[in-house]
Length: 238
Length: 246
Image (cartoon, rainbow over all chains, first blue to last red; front, side, top):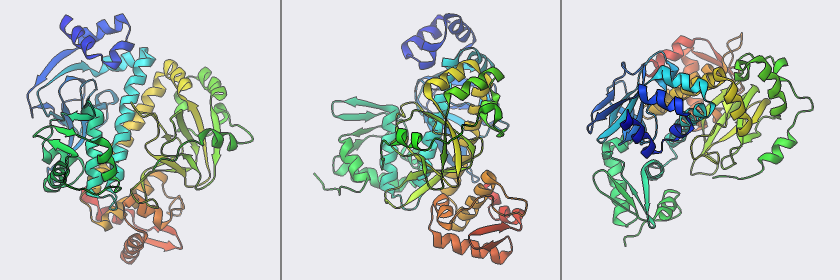
């Protein structure tokens, strides 16, 4: 239990700071640590109804299946966030599932306790509401990318910037994004093929706007990336 | 992209002559009704009411987020601009009782805009007062989260399906989304005046393609049209075309 308390303090979880001491104690008494390896299931479509997952470290992808069992990533959850809100809202059908994209540590907490804490603590409610609202905003922004006038390069720039917002680390003028996704998974976030994503990333790498390795991207010049995404700049090899 | 500022001026300019008190409001779906009775009375002093004409923005992309809007009566489209200046995509539709303009982490400005599709009355509650309401009314918070969760799922469904639909299917799916949000009147007519361009903005296509699909649906007998009005003759027939996505 002391371990969980220390984890949350180190993690500087936004919800943790707004809980009172007795509420923190309740949370710690109730929480259970869950660790997953890369690509391991966090929860299946049917078994997450009563438990909330809080990501302490790592990355978790929240997915839904297409009819043909292809996967669509609806959200990529960084540390410091809850994975899904469906357990507290008791949505009638649990259609999402979640897998870790890298070795991750999570806290499992009973959804009833979270609901009770929201009932008792308005600030905690607000933190939870804002997190849900944020996910809603992100999905709506992504929906606007489905328009046929939106070019693939704009979609990829949007994706890189979104990943930078959640996982980016500023190093001087550059941004390191350790997202943990394969290029196939990146493509599934914007409904494109893996080949088209690879092609654009390679183009950007050739002109030194970004560099990438298997599971991370280094954005060398974010302004130039944005300008290129908006069509204000063409690419010239350096 | 973002046209900043102007929100406060617009709010003052659009203040209605007579403010409708929450206790007298007939909108049963409003989330404020989930608050306890004493609190509902106190919200009257905290809210600001606006009446918007068709085409007027509730807020615009780039405006600062000061609070949340509750639609008392009317219809609103939530839009996102694309790279082409004259092209917009409708990412969401909202009607009586729905919410607009919620803030997420790090969203100090609106990433999207909202425009009235009809004469629309909205109530605005700023962030500080919203926190006060949150403090005292868990049912209100819970109902709002439930609403957003349902809206989230709808948006995810559209994102998921639009990636693999034909243009015809996208148009039909958009018509069903309009029916789901605004409903049909007693004569089975669309309960909203929606232009072909607006349907195209939902479907992510152009108005000509929408007209072509509508004409095909008319030939199949699923719908009839009179000017821009659409009459639904066979809702099940319409759904059957996109059944695999529903």
